[in-house]
Length: 233
Image 1 (cartoon, rainbow, N blue to C red):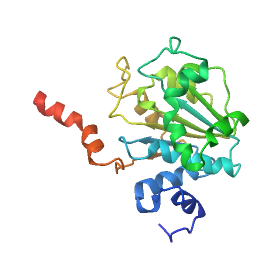
Image 2 (image 1 turned 45 degrees about the vertical axis):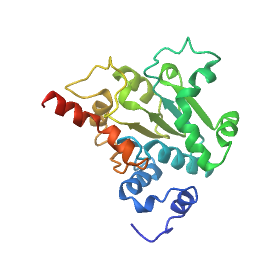
Image 3 (image 1 turned 180 degrees about the vertical axis):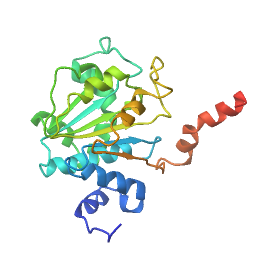
């Protein structure tokens, strides 16, 4: 893994409270996130809650944005279970705000208030999957969050917006599929189908193991074990 701070990026992360050198899974994830797009263009992570998959992606993207590796961070969030947002109060930004909390929380580690500053300057773009069509994303660090609940057409609409100059990070947890109408293909979610589809295409597939929220959240996430026991499976 090399000496501590052999790579200054890990010092930058630790200054914000994340010692990812101590976690081999997070280390591998960060390395993939920071790799040049000509070597690793897309990073796919299917990991349980509390492992830092979204926070680390946002922080790694913020580091790259500060160094002008990319021009913008694009954060796309699935809006399940509220799939139609028209009844929510306010303008588009206000409608989307509840879904963007993971992004804003992570950016507070970078610098308080940086999210609003970057949004005003165009360096940060947020949207839900409902509004992904008709846009083009070049030279961007793109984070697609809660991908396990996207249907195939939504994922296709989002992923086809991405140019080869962009890093694409697709994040999900197949333990927590919120879209009850999701159609599986050969028993797989569309998220899993797309991971299969991108094998061999400058893609890295990551697993994160440690739940940093603690034992309570870890136990809560393991509910299917009890469900199977009660069903006699």
